[in-house]
Length: 382
Ligand code: PMP
Ligand code: GLN
Image (tube, rainbow, N blue to C red; front, side):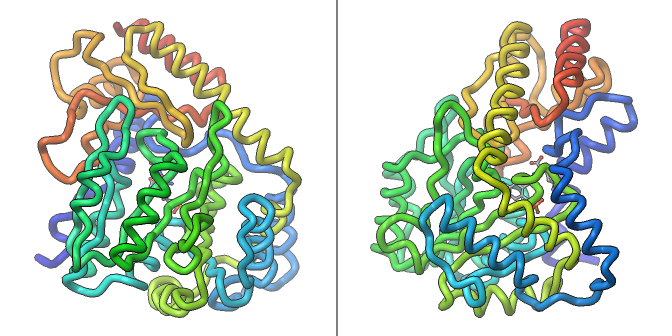
């Protein structure tokens, strides 16, 4: 059947995870922890599952979770939001991204996207009949090319999709970059869909700053979080959108038609999670920072060019210094089938074939022994 989805292939994460299973490879491709989330969160969800309240929760989300999201916004970012009118719970950030794009884009509207980009953005923008305007960051520093970004905005621009901390680059946008974006949004009267799923995974003293907290941005931003990342529970698929009430109606209508509601017991577990004390959130980032250091140092020792990572689950590497003769897809396939370690080719995060093709992304959200074993396997293969 030929339709708007025909151009969309199977996601690279599924492709590489399947290849990892087939070859018995350690999967440092798809970003999911190999350790469990906090016990009290899991206990709370299990208790909720047993207490017999297993029917549809309210469409916008369980009241406990909506309150918890509002309290989390106040605690970490000083954002005052009405839990009843400005928070929508979704089935993962994936749904939230689609719902927010649906909430603001009409066919023919332009939407600014920043490359390299997470792989659901482009297909959804296109499905909505909107026109993607791509702006590319340049490695190794992934700085924002301001003149190019400004030139991407025009009379038809309706929105920008901003991912910080960013997958796959590990970039955390600076305050100056955010201020530049905010100024463009005001000048062109646009919205921002803010994919902030890695908000609590920043390193080296980098702090995540939601674009929504900048002057004038409260009513223009839809801020997206994910319990998968914040509580190492990626399979639960609980996401949350925070936005002004003037946008929340449309986001809710989109959610109504996409999934309508999200598992109530898991929502109650995450409500407990978001109320955890500050030490939980600090501990999460420091434990991931140590894993980043472990993998980054190990890959550098083996000869990879390792790009800096300020946040997220990922480290990007340049494999050219190893002398590998092929592109990133060939490298990641060979690494999987021969070294028995899986990584993701970074060209999967670009819209066109002229992308840089010598980078591989490794996920470090794994047990230390697993990271060490992966490094040992690569060393043995080299
Ligand atoms: N955005 C980014 C940048 C991601 O890396 C991911 C991957 N997990 C998602 C969104 C999707 O999040 P979720 O699993 O909550 O749908
Ligand atoms: N966000 C994860 C990654 O980038 C994958 C999530 C998915 O498989 N859809 O690896």
